[in-house]
Every structure is written in C-alpha cells, then in structure tokens.
Length: 452
Ligand code: GAP
Image (cartoon, rainbow, N blue to C red; front, top):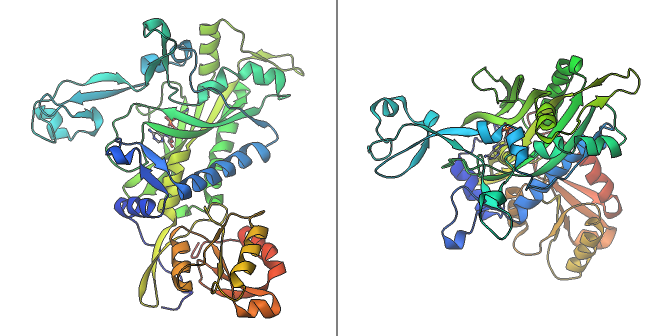
C-alpha cells in the first residue's frame, strides 16, 4: 500500500476506544484510585480540549452565525415547582424491575422477553419483582435542615432554565419572534447505565436551543431546524453514511412533544440517538404560566396579536457527541509494516492542532523550535516535543489526532524553511517559516476527510 492510499476506515470496538482514551488522556474512570464510580467519567487533558472544541463549534454556529439566537447560562438548581410544571415529577420515569436474589436493577424494556415471562433474573436466575415506576431525577436538599421543604432536583435537562427566563430575555435581549435561546450545561439523570462508556451517564452535558415561533409556523421551523442540525454534524466532519434520522412513533414521544425526530449515529454498538429535534408546541410556556401565575405571552408589535409561542427544540448531547467524534475518527492503517492508530479528527476539533519538533535538540534547533512554538500558540493549540525518533513523535500525535506536525532541521538554519507533515496523507511539504500560519489556516479551512 502506498503511503497516501485511502483505506476503508477501521471500525473500532468500544474496548479499543476505551483503551485509547485512557492511554492518551482523553477520558478516565471517575475516582479511579477508589475503584471508580459506575458510569461516571473524567475528561483528561485531551478529552477536555476535544469537548471544549465541540462546544465552541456549536456555540458559534448557534449564536454567532444566527443573529436571532442569544445565549443563556441558567442555574442547575431551580425552584422545585419548575419540575412540577414541566411534567417531570409526574412523567419522567423509567419502569424498573429488581431481582430479589442478586439485587440487580434492570429497565423493564431491556430485559429479554423470556425472562419477563418467567419472572427470572437474566443474571442469576433469581425471582424478579413487578415493574414499578422510578423517577429519573436526582433529589437533594437545600438549606441546613433535610426536610421536605428543602427538597430540590438536579436538572434533568437544560431546557427549563430557558423557558423560565423567556420573559427576562424578551425584555432585555432586543429579540422578536422568531428567535432562539441557546444554552450548554450539565444535566443529571439517575439512569441504569452498565455499559457503552460515556454514551449514557448519570451526569452529562447538553447543548440545547429553544426556538420560539408563531404557532402557525411551527412545521416550517421544525423542518428548517431538522435540516440545519443534520448539516451541522457534516460540518463537524462526521461521515454522512453514519448519520440518519429516526422519527419517534406515538409510544416514543416525550410527554411534551407533538413531533420528534432523532438524529442517530451508528455507534460501535448500533444506531442510537445523538440529538433530538422536538416540536414542544406551547406546552412548556402554558404550563409555566399556569404554575407560576405569570404572563408568558408574546405581543407582536406589528399585528398586535398576543399569543404563547410554540417551541422548536434542538437538543444535542455534548458528551455523547464526544463519543461520536471519537468513534468516527478512529482509524488504523499500516505504515512501513507497522500498525498506525490514527484519529482523523477535523482539524477544527483536534485537541492539538500543531505538533512542533526540532529534529535534534542540539545545534540551536530546540531554541528555534521553541521560538516558533511561542509564535504559533497565539493562533493554534500547539504541542512541543523533542524526545524520541521523529517517526515515534509523529505516531504519538497521530494517536491523539493532531492534523499537522512541523519539523525544524538543519536546512531550517540555512534557509528558514520547515516541513509540515499532514496526518491523513502523511505527505510532507517544505514551507517558509514565515508562511506557516497562513498555510495551516488554509489547510484547516479546506480540510476534507480521506474518502469523503
Ligand atoms: N430537552 C429535551 C431532552 O432532554 P432528550 O432526548 O432526553 O431530550 C437530548 O435528550 C439529548 O441529550 C440526547 O439526544 C442525548 O444526546 C443527550 N442525553 C440524554 N440523556 C443522556 C445521558 N443519560 N447520558 C448522556 N447523554 C444524554
């Protein structure tokens, strides 16, 4: 195989991803030195950069590129009445079944049919209880006394923080229907999560945008956002063949939704939801009007019509997108008879954009490389590395998905040129040091994944 030959991307298993993430500092088990905490994960130096890049990309797409969308950052802890109004206290439940013998708890819809019929545990054969509703919201207490009066919830979605601030934003944000409010933040759900890494966790992050529209235009905006959100993942560099829509059937619709589509990704364990686009109608604002007694109507200054807007929601998982980007980027090929593991991140998302290497430490090359690093780090996330053979250094950067490496050698001292090595093609190009920044910016702008 030639060095530049494109190949079928390797399909990673979850074990391969978990192992790479641990080895290269993307994601660690939470409180690992104490044996870990089931389904909780910590983002290491590479993981936090990747997560931030995804978040920044989303934020830019939503707020900077749409003049009619503004941002918000609401508190995680909210007045408990919010969750009564939203319907979560009553409806946000999973049917759970316990094993009387081994005490394991299962979601009823995830137990094999034969075990449900025979009432036997799929793990130990013990007797199962009947299914009972279990609310997914975490509760805690605010204030010095642990009584019912201080009971509060950790938010299970960021959306409600937006709805309760609808009037505040309207009065201060110089916005007119149709307009949107975007928010990124933590959400918490007490879910049964036994496998699949960071796919489903009890603590996770969402990127949600609530778009307020006239009721007569709900379907027009629903279609608009459905297409925009699909395109967003293509812009992130996700392969089109791995993305699809899934429409919710009547038994899948959340209690607030009139119509819902998921964008699904083909994970190593199958097609699963990545983002939901929901037509929430006027359900939320009506309920908050009813429960708070406050007027949450909108007055159209031109037509003088007063109404409660409908809401089109785009709700993406940030931590789940991290898993999508990792799964999609993972690839293996063979270089000089050796397996190369490479993460083919879009350069906009890569935790490190440029590796900077002096060929050797001596003869002033290290000093020159450090100086270049000081300059480039103003515009790019850089990583300086002077240890080991140059091929090893490239390989280490391939494994964390660094799209470009710049090497300074003896020729650099003579003519002020360096080589840029491209991760995907492994081609090397000699450029003037003064032109590196422009060359890299162009390569980022023009990036296309091999074979796409
Ligand atoms: N506000 C609407 C809402 O929360 P959802 O379909 O329940 O809708 C939206 O969640 C997105 O949040 C999902 O598509 C998924 O990406 C992410 N998500 C939901 N629960 C999650 C969990 N337990 N762990 C990780 N991500 C989760």
